[in-house]
Amino acid sequence: MQSLSFLSAGKNTAISPGFVKGRPVFSGVAVGLLSATLSMVAITGCAREPSVTVPVEGALSFEDSVLYGFSGCSADTECPAGICAGGTCVGFLMVPSDMARNMAGDRVAKALAGHPDLADRLAGAAASVAADTSAEVYSRARAADLFRFIPCGLASSALGGLVTSTDEPVRFYAARSLALCGDPAGRAALAPFLQHDSEPIRVMAENALSADVSETSK
Image 1 (cartoon, rainbow, N blue to C red):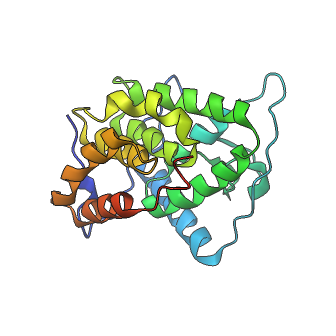
Image 2 (cartoon, rainbow, N blue to C red):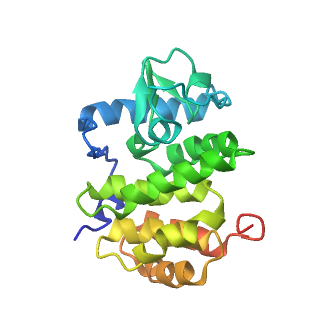
């Protein structure tokens, strides 16, 4: 069982995502460098809107490129999350901070707009990671967090069983994604986090529970 203690106020962590299914595990140092790059992108606003390119045969799939990223990019527009850092498209599961995931997720949402087939595929891939109890817990939690940027109609079936997870990060991010879709079970599971020891967790829970979900729940 894992807890959210890494989000205690004053801690700045860069946790290895522990990629599953044969993909490489990036070191804490590498993730930290990417985190710093993402923070600079957020401050300067230099990341551009991504374009959607359906992968050619034999290429990395759209959903894998969103989750895990890939090397060999030269511009932000080549990356589904809209961020090319040091020649690498940053995958959502590599992004350790909530602020940077907000930025990357917004670009993923724009890439999905008008492409329900891509949304279905991404939801299926993210759900598989989130539900895989053999995977590294923070990768699972970030996969659940990705559902904030995927149409809400795909979230309930994917995350409903995770709001009772014994792994606190997975439970929190699944509950928050569902709560932002107006899901009663998600809101109920998120409410206890209003009393969490970590102030950042309390703030994120309060923001989600007080958000106007009239648009996001559609």
